[in-house]
Image (cartoon, rainbow, N blue to C red; front, side, top):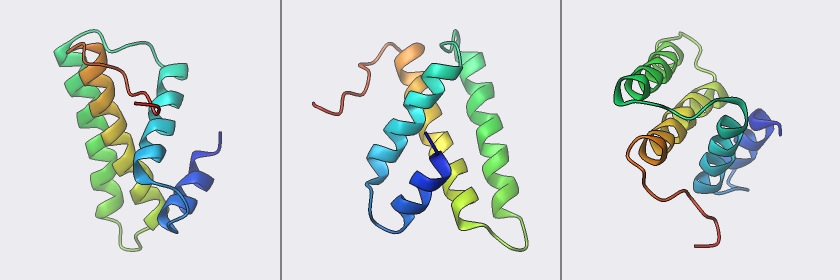
Length: 94
């Protein structure tokens, strides 16, 4: 799945942001083990935030890159809630 292409489509209004976060979360589940602890979850979200911050502080902001980093934060917050706090997984049919 090409998340950069999906990001551009979302930014152009052809996809919903919620659906894009779900796609990002789905990709993260495929490539990374579940988050095991509060501290690990914090570290992952903090790292994503620092990447977002780096994009924000650039002189020439790349809107797609900024959007991807922002979405990564949202997806990792959802992943933390599911893996560590044991909330219900996102189901697009709910």
